[in-house]
Length: 128
Image (cartoon, rainbow, N blue to C red):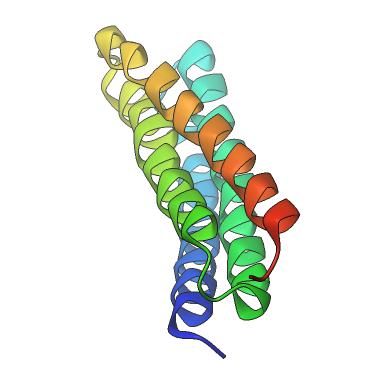
């Protein structure tokens, strides 16, 4: 297995574990402390984080087949950046109530879009 595959499999697994931790934190600690509208924001962050943790794992699996794909490597980094920017801004917004953090969220959304497009390009181009 390539180093790229291992890297994104571990990164995806670590993010999946973090999703479980943050989901439990939200359900058991924040639920009674955060207003309802901000709890919905937190739950959105957990949902997108979970999907994209699985996306990182998918990139790791495909990297075993396409270890030299620049598109796949770029997809992985864009997806990881999307988790930080999209989910991270929503996590922070929900626990701090600082609304301007929501302005960062769309940048993470664009990173997610680019990641999935690059993932598709990598698969379509296939091995060289």
